Image (cartoon, rainbow, N blue to C red):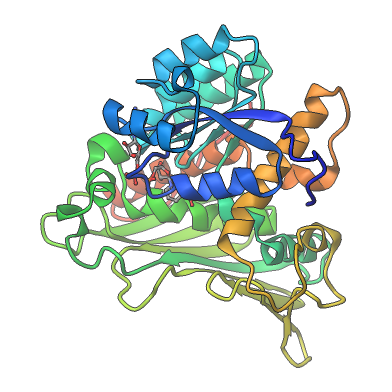
Length: 391
Ligand code: NAD
């Protein structure tokens, strides 16, 4: 990932949400700026127009490209000669569908935050629409951009773990162990079904844990059995959930999503056990991968380990030992997206290693998973099929 555009980014980029009060906006801005593929030129940054206007000004954008809302942005951008190549959407969950639909209909390529929609019909509609308009869309599962996550996937694919038997994945933090929604807008909308959808932690963090599991193992979840709780008084949606998983190639799994895991900081981790070996990755030590082979001493792979596979090696930016992490992972997703899009625009085949990009279909699988979990919980943990069909 090197700057090969002489400080002249080839892709014009706009943002919906991501303004002054946004949690995730900065991560996107760091990601888009790192490898010089994108130039941020437009945005509807905020639900509050004055705050959004000021924010666009503070970024140095032209005032006629800072918009009051996404509808105005889509209309005015689509009639410009120098119109945007990419629109990234990072607003509360319930708004994703209408905003993404609008931009896809207008022919824009879209990077969409997760969960991509609040129901699977909408998710499938976006997939169909994106195909019809022939645009590139990605869902922002940023954790799949870590080199050691790509390494884990490559090791499973190479058969180094043997047949996958057990997959345990968790995103369990303690940031909502008290009523965070009383003093944080971000926590408030996440705990309101009107804005979050039918789940809180499963949607907010569980979908990331799910994506890691399916990304690394290449197996989709067929059925779930879910239990969930709202521990903090007054909360409508769950702040903790345990989900048993049945995977398509026979693996058995478990997913834990939580906001009440006191003492867990970010709490994203995965363990995959095969017939011949296992791996364990924890986001708080992102550049290490624990690797065990049956009958051998457990090893910790580092970013300079000779065993690294090409999908991981290509993401290394500095010498091993430098603490790279979260922001670089986000950047890797952005840069893969740019490479795939530029190849498409130039009529070329993309570098196959860029195709690990999380897709809209991955986003839809997350939404199907959420629906299945809610159904299962309502039936006291009965096994419920996830019915995602690639269309
Ligand atoms: P937030 O509450 O911190 O920020 C939301 C922002 O969206 C606010 O600034 C608000 O003014 C703006 N907004 C709301 N409606 C809008 C509209 N119609 N048009 C323009 N702007 C609007 O929320 P957040 O934590 O930044 O989360 C936003 C989205 O990103 C959510 O879907 C969340 O699930 C996702 N997210 C993803 C990750 C990740 O790792 N991929 C991490 C955090 C959040």
